[in-house]
Amino acid sequence: MPSRITDVLKEMVTKKETQLLGLQTALPFILVRKDGTPFTVLGFSKGCFFRSPFFTVLSVDEENLCVVLEVLASCGCGNNLFHTKARVLVNLDCFCSIEIVDKPVFDFLLLSHVTKDLVCLPFMLTKNDITKTICRINRKDVQLTATITVYYDGEDSQIRLTVYTYEGIITLIVPKNESRSITVFKLQSIEIAAPIKEVKGTIEMQLNYCEKKIIYY
Image: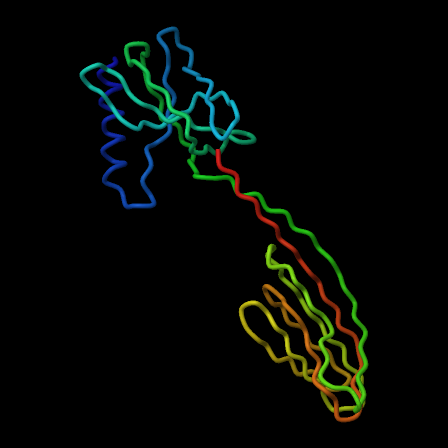
């Protein structure tokens, strides 16, 4: 039986080495002891201990029937597995079978947290006013999606707004007694052009802040 396990692991290593860069990974598996129980180890990675029965193969020593395994970490309900820095050297004579596990293996866990905020900004500019910045957001550390709705009821026939994002500039024209909406990514600021007579209205913004955290195991 160890010879069969060795053949399976050798095939995994061969497939891993011939796959495209960025996609190479051996299939996860469980090793079964001779008493029928799964082989489980206590791994240590990134300053933490964890227990796992899941592995991928790194190298095979046919002559001594030994293999170097990477210990995989599971998260939450265990449907996903993650690569770690934990390694273990085992002798295949201790096992009777190998079971391939149909679970994806990832390099890291990505956690996302979304905070929503609704902002209402009334405005009024007269012919004596210059172009005015009505809002400025300095949050480069988060991904910000903003839905901007402009309600305009001033004396001028239309109002012109310039929306600045970290990816570009957008001009928004709103006719008198109408409204316009636009959704942008990475909002930086909103600017209202100087009026001919008077512009007034309200700007409503639905702000969605998305903070992401990458966890390596």
